[in-house]
Length: 193
Image (tube, rainbow, N blue to C red):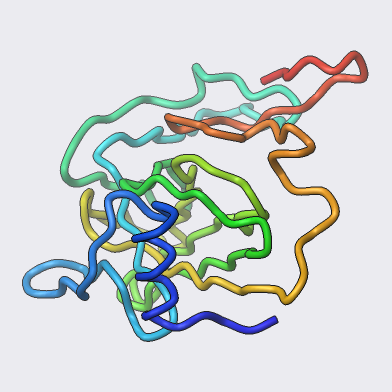
């Protein structure tokens, strides 16, 4: 298994629409860069954000997310409060091949401002817009910019197909179209959030 280069990413986007929309070059003039790089793809964030509303006594329960704990903000710039976080989604829609898994890392421009990006690996045959957790570890607010780069996706291709893909197991985040809060599958098989 090895990390795949720019030409492979381009080929997968042409043949299989792995990333849509796909930016062939690296766009960097006046923006936080996005698009293809030597061994990855710098993903952008859309202009919709779910900003956590911190109040005394609130406990976030990943098994029972309360949407009222978040404020939806539609804007070109989102300010993350000090020591807080927002959820966002990618501009790009991803379709991951059966023998590929990804790792995502935040861009250094944001890391130097105290911003930490968390995205779980895109499993084989997962598809959808990516829900991204963006944390501000700084003691002051920090801005993030819609339609600009936030993090880099690296693609790892295996020599063998997996036995059970994300699509095969009907993963709970398959084909998500919007910012999706945590979901737990109950013992009865329904998706709870």
